Amino acid sequence: MPKITFMGAGSTIFAKNVLGDCMCAEPLHGATIALYDIDKSRLEDSARMLEFLNETLRARMRIERYLGPRQRKAALRDADWVVNAVQIGGYKPATVTDFEVPKKYGLRQTIGDTLGIGGIFRALRTIPVLLQFAREMECVCPDAWFLNYANPVAMLVMGLTRGSNIRTVGLCHSVEGAAPRLLKYAGIKARNLQYKVAGVNHQSWVLEVSDRGRDLYPRIKRALRRAEQNGTLPERDLVRLELLKRFGYFVTESSFHSAEYYPWFIKARYPRLLKQYNIGLDEYPKRCVNQIKRWAQMRKDLVKTGISHKRSHEYASHMMEAMLTDVPFKFGGNVPNTDLVTNLPRRAIVEVHCIADRSGISPCYVGDLPEPCAALNRLSVNVQILTVEAALTRKKDYLYQAALLDPHTGGELSVDDTVRLCDDLLKAHGTLIPKMR
Image 1 (tube, rainbow, N blue to C red):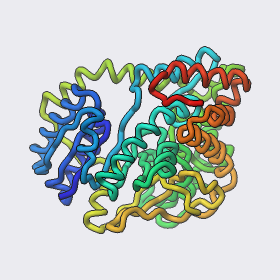
Image 2: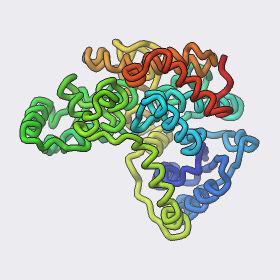
Image 3: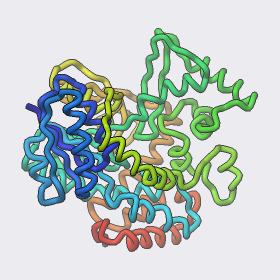
Image 4: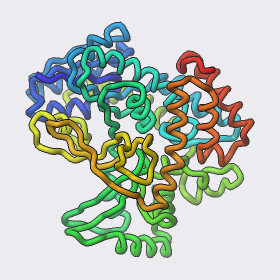
């Protein structure tokens, strides 16, 4: 029977979504689920919740617990799939550090988990740990697929593909929701929606959107121009809609994310832009604080009371089922750019449509992106490549260069302040980041 290992199983809600989905998939019934975490209390919460779901859904799965690095290799042994959801350093101290230290330099962020100074340092904390996972996988489950949900997706997948021999793909649910959201904003209903998406994680582009073969983009753009004239554009996504207006295509990730990927929206000299584009600074820390406040009730609901689960649109269980049954499943995956997107660098990790079946994962060829979209993506790829170089070589120069090339950081800080900020963050993170030279 197959085995699924979940790294970071203390992420109870996410574990419920992914592993609950697996319990809803009949071809996966009877599988072994190995839960791994370094937090005993959260690990037990997830295990009890999943044991209840296992009984309720009659999935006949064997649920095992593994705590801490000494038990990690046992958790990975003979796994067919390894689902990764770790957050190295957690909200405190790591995320707080990523936000508070840059504030001293006047550098503000919204989410800080994918690009920008926050994304760079999250990658520096996480890549070395994932490479430890990979070394153990090479020994005890060399043929397993590593399904990475942790951010920053592109940098982590790049680090794993360059630093190990394991098979990995990065997963993110922003792709599947982009085209339906765009139609909603334009007030259009489609009977047979079809779309094509490609780019890099959190900055992929809805390249085509159609209904029964009819291109909907002209109609969408007309509707959005009318909404802008009438002052009725949806306030929650003004940054994305500005990018659509200026560059021609709708981007997959939210405005709170997108605002910090470019040099135009969060600027100390132009504070009015925050109101103009409805940008909430420190959005991710605020979400973390609210989630922590709600956790007591959430824990009671998930662990101590009866819960149910319906299969979601998360990719993981559908991919696993496709690999077992050989019934193909299409999804948005983050994979090495083996000439898939021809006007992005070969070292890039690109987000493209992929097919999962018994042969594994087959990414789909895209060709050239529209040049404005590729130009924006290259700004991010430059930062990603240099951050991974810093993580793999532990050379500070690569770190400094990544931060200097980051559009938002470079748009706000001088060279000297950028270097000093990096040094301050290395000191503040301490042993969470391996010593750099």
